[in-house]
Length: 344
Image 1: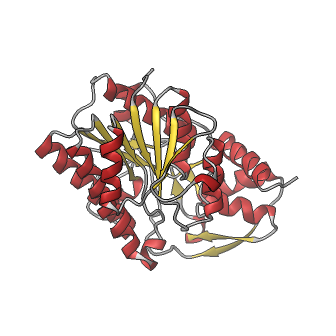
Image 2: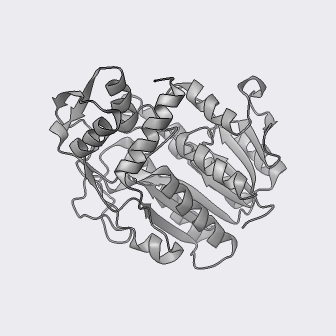
Protein backbone atom coordinates (compact mmCIF):
# COMPACT_ATOMS: atom_id res chain seq x y z
CA UNK A 1 0.00 0.00 0.00
CA UNK A 2 1.25 3.47 -0.90
CA UNK A 3 1.33 5.86 2.05
CA UNK A 4 1.84 9.62 1.94
CA UNK A 5 2.35 9.66 -1.82
CA UNK A 6 0.79 12.74 -3.39
CA UNK A 7 -1.21 12.11 -6.55
CA UNK A 8 -2.90 14.57 -8.88
CA UNK A 9 -5.98 13.12 -10.58
CA UNK A 10 -7.33 15.34 -13.33
CA UNK A 11 -10.92 14.83 -14.45
CA UNK A 12 -11.72 13.84 -10.87
CA UNK A 13 -15.41 14.82 -11.15
CA UNK A 14 -15.76 12.64 -14.23
CA UNK A 15 -16.92 9.04 -14.33
CA UNK A 16 -13.58 7.21 -14.30
CA UNK A 17 -11.84 9.94 -12.31
CA UNK A 18 -14.40 9.79 -9.50
CA UNK A 19 -13.99 6.03 -9.10
CA UNK A 20 -10.19 6.15 -9.18
CA UNK A 21 -10.10 8.98 -6.62
CA UNK A 22 -12.44 6.99 -4.35
CA UNK A 23 -10.09 3.99 -4.45
CA UNK A 24 -6.92 6.04 -3.97
CA UNK A 25 -8.40 7.74 -0.91
CA UNK A 26 -9.12 4.34 0.65
CA UNK A 27 -5.56 3.23 -0.06
CA UNK A 28 -4.12 6.21 1.83
CA UNK A 29 -2.81 8.20 -1.09
CA UNK A 30 -2.71 11.94 -0.57
CA UNK A 31 -5.04 12.89 -3.43
CA UNK A 32 -5.61 16.21 -5.14
CA UNK A 33 -8.52 16.13 -7.58
CA UNK A 34 -8.80 18.59 -10.43
CA UNK A 35 -11.68 19.23 -12.82
CA UNK A 36 -12.91 22.13 -14.96
CA UNK A 37 -16.55 21.15 -14.27
CA UNK A 38 -17.55 22.00 -17.83
CA UNK A 39 -21.12 21.51 -19.04
CA UNK A 40 -20.55 18.88 -21.74
CA UNK A 41 -23.12 16.89 -19.78
CA UNK A 42 -25.22 17.61 -16.68
CA UNK A 43 -22.82 19.29 -14.27
CA UNK A 44 -25.07 18.32 -11.35
CA UNK A 45 -23.94 14.72 -11.81
CA UNK A 46 -20.33 15.90 -11.46
CA UNK A 47 -21.19 17.80 -8.28
CA UNK A 48 -22.96 14.71 -6.94
CA UNK A 49 -19.85 12.59 -7.54
CA UNK A 50 -17.71 15.15 -5.72
CA UNK A 51 -20.17 15.20 -2.81
CA UNK A 52 -19.73 11.41 -2.41
CA UNK A 53 -16.14 12.14 -1.37
CA UNK A 54 -16.92 15.15 0.81
CA UNK A 55 -16.46 18.03 -1.64
CA UNK A 56 -19.46 20.39 -1.48
CA UNK A 57 -20.65 22.47 -4.45
CA UNK A 58 -21.07 25.57 -2.26
CA UNK A 59 -17.37 25.54 -1.35
CA UNK A 60 -16.00 25.21 -4.90
CA UNK A 61 -14.58 28.23 -6.71
CA UNK A 62 -11.94 28.61 -9.40
CA UNK A 63 -8.39 27.71 -8.27
CA UNK A 64 -9.44 27.32 -4.61
CA UNK A 65 -8.18 24.12 -2.95
CA UNK A 66 -11.17 22.63 -1.12
CA UNK A 67 -10.56 20.12 1.66
CA UNK A 68 -12.87 17.11 1.80
CA UNK A 69 -15.30 17.07 4.70
CA UNK A 70 -15.00 13.28 4.84
CA UNK A 71 -11.36 12.43 4.14
CA UNK A 72 -8.22 14.12 5.45
CA UNK A 73 -6.23 12.90 2.45
CA UNK A 74 -8.39 14.43 -0.28
CA UNK A 75 -8.72 17.95 -1.69
CA UNK A 76 -10.24 19.31 -4.90
CA UNK A 77 -9.62 22.30 -7.13
CA UNK A 78 -11.46 23.67 -10.16
CA UNK A 79 -8.89 24.41 -12.86
CA UNK A 80 -8.87 24.14 -16.66
CA UNK A 81 -6.06 22.11 -18.21
CA UNK A 82 -5.71 24.79 -20.89
CA UNK A 83 -4.61 27.35 -18.29
CA UNK A 84 -0.88 26.73 -17.99
CA UNK A 85 -0.22 29.32 -15.30
CA UNK A 86 -2.92 28.00 -12.97
CA UNK A 87 -1.61 24.45 -13.42
CA UNK A 88 1.94 25.59 -12.81
CA UNK A 89 0.94 27.20 -9.50
CA UNK A 90 -0.66 23.92 -8.44
CA UNK A 91 2.39 21.84 -9.39
CA UNK A 92 4.71 24.29 -7.59
CA UNK A 93 2.71 24.26 -4.37
CA UNK A 94 1.83 20.55 -4.16
CA UNK A 95 4.98 18.66 -5.23
CA UNK A 96 3.17 15.68 -6.73
CA UNK A 97 4.72 12.22 -6.87
CA UNK A 98 2.34 10.92 -9.54
CA UNK A 99 -0.09 12.39 -12.04
CA UNK A 100 -3.09 10.50 -13.42
CA UNK A 101 -4.45 12.60 -16.28
CA UNK A 102 -8.05 11.61 -17.01
CA UNK A 103 -9.36 15.05 -17.94
CA UNK A 104 -10.34 15.37 -21.58
CA UNK A 105 -13.12 16.48 -23.83
CA UNK A 106 -14.99 13.22 -24.23
CA UNK A 107 -17.26 11.92 -26.96
CA UNK A 108 -16.67 10.74 -30.51
CA UNK A 109 -19.62 12.39 -32.25
CA UNK A 110 -19.27 15.70 -30.42
CA UNK A 111 -15.78 16.01 -31.90
CA UNK A 112 -17.42 16.45 -35.31
CA UNK A 113 -19.61 19.30 -34.04
CA UNK A 114 -17.06 21.09 -31.88
CA UNK A 115 -13.50 20.15 -32.90
CA UNK A 116 -11.84 23.09 -31.14
CA UNK A 117 -12.84 21.74 -27.72
CA UNK A 118 -10.73 18.65 -28.44
CA UNK A 119 -7.69 20.65 -29.55
CA UNK A 120 -7.92 22.85 -26.44
CA UNK A 121 -8.48 20.18 -23.80
CA UNK A 122 -7.03 16.99 -25.27
CA UNK A 123 -3.95 18.39 -27.00
CA UNK A 124 -3.08 21.78 -25.46
CA UNK A 125 -4.27 20.60 -22.03
CA UNK A 126 -2.28 17.39 -22.32
CA UNK A 127 0.82 19.33 -23.36
CA UNK A 128 0.50 21.50 -20.24
CA UNK A 129 0.22 18.43 -18.01
CA UNK A 130 3.16 16.57 -19.51
CA UNK A 131 5.37 19.66 -19.69
CA UNK A 132 4.77 20.45 -16.02
CA UNK A 133 5.20 16.78 -15.09
CA UNK A 134 8.62 16.96 -16.70
CA UNK A 135 9.60 20.30 -15.17
CA UNK A 136 8.63 19.19 -11.67
CA UNK A 137 10.12 15.70 -12.07
CA UNK A 138 6.98 13.64 -11.48
CA UNK A 139 7.85 9.99 -10.80
CA UNK A 140 5.32 8.71 -13.34
CA UNK A 141 2.62 10.20 -15.56
CA UNK A 142 -0.42 8.01 -16.29
CA UNK A 143 -2.90 9.30 -18.85
CA UNK A 144 -6.17 8.25 -20.41
CA UNK A 145 -5.89 7.10 -23.98
CA UNK A 146 -8.71 5.21 -25.68
CA UNK A 147 -9.62 2.15 -27.71
CA UNK A 148 -10.58 4.69 -30.38
CA UNK A 149 -6.89 4.98 -31.37
CA UNK A 150 -7.35 1.68 -33.23
CA UNK A 151 -9.87 3.45 -35.44
CA UNK A 152 -10.70 1.62 -38.65
CA UNK A 153 -8.27 -1.23 -38.06
CA UNK A 154 -9.84 -4.62 -38.75
CA UNK A 155 -7.02 -6.59 -37.11
CA UNK A 156 -8.78 -7.94 -33.99
CA UNK A 157 -8.22 -8.42 -31.16
CA UNK A 158 -6.37 -5.11 -30.93
CA UNK A 159 -2.77 -5.51 -29.72
CA UNK A 160 -0.74 -2.62 -28.36
CA UNK A 161 2.45 -3.42 -30.25
CA UNK A 162 1.20 -4.67 -33.60
CA UNK A 163 -2.26 -3.28 -34.45
CA UNK A 164 -2.27 -0.21 -36.71
CA UNK A 165 -3.22 2.99 -34.88
CA UNK A 166 -2.69 5.33 -37.83
CA UNK A 167 -6.28 5.20 -39.10
CA UNK A 168 -8.38 7.27 -36.64
CA UNK A 169 -12.10 7.57 -37.41
CA UNK A 170 -12.69 10.77 -35.40
CA UNK A 171 -10.90 13.85 -34.11
CA UNK A 172 -11.33 12.45 -30.61
CA UNK A 173 -9.36 9.37 -31.66
CA UNK A 174 -6.73 11.53 -33.34
CA UNK A 175 -6.33 13.62 -30.17
CA UNK A 176 -5.73 10.49 -28.09
CA UNK A 177 -3.19 9.15 -30.58
CA UNK A 178 -1.49 12.56 -30.43
CA UNK A 179 -1.23 12.22 -26.64
CA UNK A 180 0.57 8.90 -27.05
CA UNK A 181 3.03 10.37 -29.55
CA UNK A 182 3.77 13.34 -27.31
CA UNK A 183 4.23 11.01 -24.34
CA UNK A 184 6.68 8.86 -26.30
CA UNK A 185 8.69 11.95 -27.18
CA UNK A 186 8.89 13.12 -23.56
CA UNK A 187 9.82 9.65 -22.36
CA UNK A 188 12.54 9.43 -25.02
CA UNK A 189 13.99 12.94 -24.73
CA UNK A 190 13.56 13.67 -21.03
CA UNK A 191 13.39 10.22 -19.47
CA UNK A 192 9.90 10.98 -18.11
CA UNK A 193 8.07 7.72 -17.31
CA UNK A 194 4.66 7.71 -19.00
CA UNK A 195 1.92 5.10 -19.30
CA UNK A 196 -1.05 5.41 -21.65
CA UNK A 197 -4.29 3.70 -20.65
CA UNK A 198 -6.35 2.60 -23.65
CA UNK A 199 -9.82 2.34 -22.10
CA UNK A 200 -12.41 0.17 -23.84
CA UNK A 201 -16.07 1.33 -23.45
CA UNK A 202 -16.05 1.76 -19.68
CA UNK A 203 -19.43 1.47 -17.94
CA UNK A 204 -20.90 1.18 -14.46
CA UNK A 205 -22.48 3.23 -11.64
CA UNK A 206 -22.04 7.00 -11.91
CA UNK A 207 -21.46 6.61 -15.68
CA UNK A 208 -21.66 9.35 -18.30
CA UNK A 209 -25.12 10.38 -19.60
CA UNK A 210 -23.91 10.34 -23.22
CA UNK A 211 -22.90 6.66 -23.11
CA UNK A 212 -25.04 3.85 -24.47
CA UNK A 213 -25.90 2.15 -21.18
CA UNK A 214 -27.08 5.42 -19.63
CA UNK A 215 -29.10 6.41 -22.71
CA UNK A 216 -30.72 2.98 -23.11
CA UNK A 217 -31.57 2.65 -19.41
CA UNK A 218 -33.07 6.13 -19.26
CA UNK A 219 -35.18 5.48 -22.36
CA UNK A 220 -36.36 2.09 -21.15
CA UNK A 221 -37.43 3.36 -17.74
CA UNK A 222 -39.22 6.35 -19.29
CA UNK A 223 -40.94 4.28 -22.01
CA UNK A 224 -39.07 6.13 -24.73
CA UNK A 225 -37.67 4.77 -27.98
CA UNK A 226 -33.95 4.00 -28.23
CA UNK A 227 -31.68 4.64 -31.19
CA UNK A 228 -29.78 1.57 -32.38
CA UNK A 229 -27.04 2.52 -34.84
CA UNK A 230 -25.71 0.37 -37.68
CA UNK A 231 -28.91 -1.63 -37.24
CA UNK A 232 -27.44 -3.17 -34.12
CA UNK A 233 -24.47 -4.69 -35.98
CA UNK A 234 -21.93 -3.33 -33.51
CA UNK A 235 -19.54 -5.12 -31.16
CA UNK A 236 -18.12 -3.41 -28.08
CA UNK A 237 -15.63 -4.63 -25.50
CA UNK A 238 -17.66 -3.28 -22.55
CA UNK A 239 -15.39 -2.94 -19.50
CA UNK A 240 -16.72 -2.56 -15.96
CA UNK A 241 -15.44 0.38 -13.94
CA UNK A 242 -14.17 -1.68 -10.97
CA UNK A 243 -11.87 -3.60 -13.33
CA UNK A 244 -10.51 -0.33 -14.71
CA UNK A 245 -9.81 0.98 -11.21
CA UNK A 246 -8.08 -2.24 -10.12
CA UNK A 247 -5.87 -2.19 -13.22
CA UNK A 248 -4.84 1.45 -12.79
CA UNK A 249 -4.08 1.11 -9.07
CA UNK A 250 -1.93 -1.97 -9.69
CA UNK A 251 0.03 -0.09 -12.37
CA UNK A 252 0.58 2.87 -10.05
CA UNK A 253 1.79 0.56 -7.28
CA UNK A 254 4.29 -1.00 -9.68
CA UNK A 255 5.55 2.39 -10.75
CA UNK A 256 6.03 3.42 -7.14
CA UNK A 257 8.16 0.33 -6.53
CA UNK A 258 10.09 0.96 -9.77
CA UNK A 259 9.36 -2.60 -10.81
CA UNK A 260 8.68 -4.03 -14.26
CA UNK A 261 7.36 -0.87 -15.86
CA UNK A 262 9.35 0.86 -18.56
CA UNK A 263 9.69 4.58 -19.29
CA UNK A 264 7.11 4.49 -22.06
CA UNK A 265 4.16 2.14 -22.16
CA UNK A 266 0.60 1.82 -23.40
CA UNK A 267 -1.85 -0.81 -22.19
CA UNK A 268 -5.23 -2.03 -23.35
CA UNK A 269 -7.73 -1.92 -20.49
CA UNK A 270 -10.61 -3.93 -21.89
CA UNK A 271 -12.73 -6.96 -21.06
CA UNK A 272 -11.28 -9.12 -23.86
CA UNK A 273 -14.85 -10.23 -24.62
CA UNK A 274 -16.77 -8.12 -27.16
CA UNK A 275 -20.57 -8.11 -26.93
CA UNK A 276 -23.08 -7.51 -29.71
CA UNK A 277 -25.02 -4.28 -29.19
CA UNK A 278 -28.39 -6.06 -29.39
CA UNK A 279 -27.26 -8.57 -26.76
CA UNK A 280 -26.25 -5.65 -24.56
CA UNK A 281 -29.69 -4.11 -25.01
CA UNK A 282 -31.29 -7.47 -24.24
CA UNK A 283 -29.40 -7.57 -20.94
CA UNK A 284 -30.73 -4.12 -20.05
CA UNK A 285 -34.27 -5.25 -20.90
CA UNK A 286 -33.82 -8.36 -18.78
CA UNK A 287 -32.64 -6.36 -15.77
CA UNK A 288 -35.40 -3.76 -16.11
CA UNK A 289 -38.08 -6.33 -16.90
CA UNK A 290 -39.50 -4.96 -20.12
CA UNK A 291 -38.74 -4.74 -23.83
CA UNK A 292 -37.66 -1.46 -25.40
CA UNK A 293 -38.94 0.13 -28.58
CA UNK A 294 -36.09 0.49 -31.03
CA UNK A 295 -35.33 2.74 -34.00
CA UNK A 296 -32.72 1.06 -36.22
CA UNK A 297 -30.42 3.61 -37.84
CA UNK A 298 -27.28 3.59 -40.05
CA UNK A 299 -23.73 3.82 -38.72
CA UNK A 300 -22.87 7.29 -37.46
CA UNK A 301 -19.87 9.28 -38.66
CA UNK A 302 -16.86 8.64 -36.43
CA UNK A 303 -18.13 5.31 -35.12
CA UNK A 304 -16.33 1.99 -35.55
CA UNK A 305 -18.12 -1.34 -35.86
CA UNK A 306 -16.06 -3.41 -33.45
CA UNK A 307 -13.67 -3.04 -30.53
CA UNK A 308 -11.84 -5.97 -29.00
CA UNK A 309 -8.93 -5.73 -26.55
CA UNK A 310 -6.04 -8.14 -26.31
CA UNK A 311 -5.06 -7.77 -22.61
CA UNK A 312 -2.14 -10.20 -22.40
CA UNK A 313 0.39 -7.39 -21.98
CA UNK A 314 -1.56 -5.98 -19.03
CA UNK A 315 -2.15 -9.38 -17.42
CA UNK A 316 1.48 -10.43 -17.74
CA UNK A 317 2.57 -7.30 -15.87
CA UNK A 318 0.00 -6.92 -13.08
CA UNK A 319 -1.47 -10.46 -12.85
CA UNK A 320 -4.94 -9.04 -13.41
CA UNK A 321 -7.19 -8.36 -16.39
CA UNK A 322 -10.76 -7.03 -16.57
CA UNK A 323 -13.28 -9.86 -16.29
CA UNK A 324 -16.64 -8.62 -14.95
CA UNK A 325 -19.65 -10.06 -16.79
CA UNK A 326 -22.13 -7.88 -18.63
CA UNK A 327 -25.00 -9.26 -16.55
CA UNK A 328 -23.35 -8.19 -13.27
CA UNK A 329 -22.18 -4.82 -14.59
CA UNK A 330 -25.51 -3.85 -16.15
CA UNK A 331 -27.34 -4.92 -12.98
CA UNK A 332 -25.12 -2.72 -10.80
CA UNK A 333 -25.55 0.27 -13.11
CA UNK A 334 -29.35 -0.03 -13.21
CA UNK A 335 -29.49 -0.34 -9.42
CA UNK A 336 -27.46 2.87 -9.15
CA UNK A 337 -29.52 4.67 -11.80
CA UNK A 338 -32.85 3.85 -10.17
CA UNK A 339 -31.57 4.97 -6.78
CA UNK A 340 -29.97 8.17 -8.07
CA UNK A 341 -32.97 9.24 -10.13
CA UNK A 342 -35.58 8.00 -7.61
CA UNK A 343 -37.19 5.26 -9.68
CA UNK A 344 -39.26 2.71 -7.80
